[in-house]
Image (cartoon, rainbow, N blue to C red; front, side, top):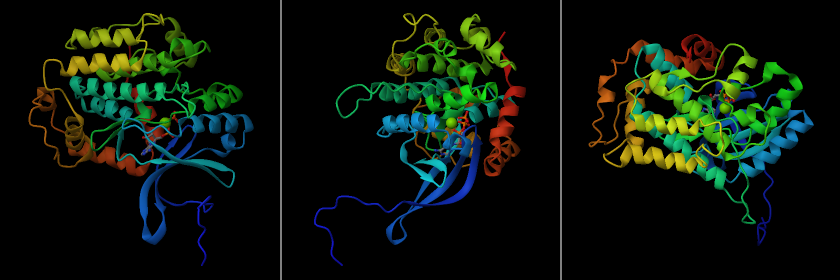
Length: 367
Ligand SMILES: Nc1ncnc2c1ncn2[C@@H]1O[C@H](COP(=O)(O)OP(=O)(O)OP(=O)(O)O)[C@@H](O)[C@H]1O
Ligand SMILES: [Mg+2]
């Protein structure tokens, strides 16, 4: 066989085999899958399929592909990497890095349902990592050297994943913009997570990276206190809350929170754009200063050990001798039945529905 001297194109399409359904999200399904290559090469990936009603809407597809192109080259430890976007029959799908772990909503809800305190230092660590992922994406430049102007627009606990190795990863970059088209067309039923919107987003004003900072502030408040600031059962009331409800102080719900952390939360939640953190990097820096300036703060290994111990039923094997955080110790011992339930939950692939119910039932709205 004659080989071309200079390879120009490869047109073979990739081969994936679905291993199991992981979840059903608002836009389609997420599978664990195997990608196959030459001579038995196999790699675990996640495949996210986009519902046919979305895949066949030309305006959705235009925006979806436009944004996917923008975020295609995002490669950062704190971002779930997209490998490939393609079409199978009428359905678009995205192949991406598979995350062996849990999402932040599961992390929060499991603490609440077990009556465990959310671990303050680790919560600060998790948010600091999301800040660094956001900062990288916000600053990403294209081939011509100009800023791409990437804004996530859907920073929420379900889109933050924690790997069993203790790495925090933000996912679903570039999806929210296209999704909005469908929401506008199909009305309120599909209107996504308004409770994590910034006031600018809720008013359909122009958004920039500071909008993601506000959304992350809402997530951080919930992560530290177990309370959601704006959420109610009614979509419009929630939207109104985002626009004008008084923002409570986290210490009203959890008096043991360090004041320095409270200040960081409150600054990320400033409705006045000029008073808010101007960048996610600035917020990340303040969190890192809080965690590390006078002590050996939490690391990936601390988070990994914590997740393995309390969530994943794996031995905590990372070496973390300096971190003597008593909060890991003060937690009530993990009931094995809870762990079983959580793992079964994943295996059953039902957490889309079940957790959102748990969310409504388990979460106390902030007064
Ligand atoms: N790369 C991945 N690896 C492993 N699990 C993933 C991956 N991406 C998403 N998931 C899991 O699948 C779930 C569903 O994701 P999906 O983005 O479809 O919906 P969602 O984020 O839960 O909600 P929404 O539909 O509002 O975006 C996530 O909550 C997460 O737990
Ligand atoms: Mg998602």
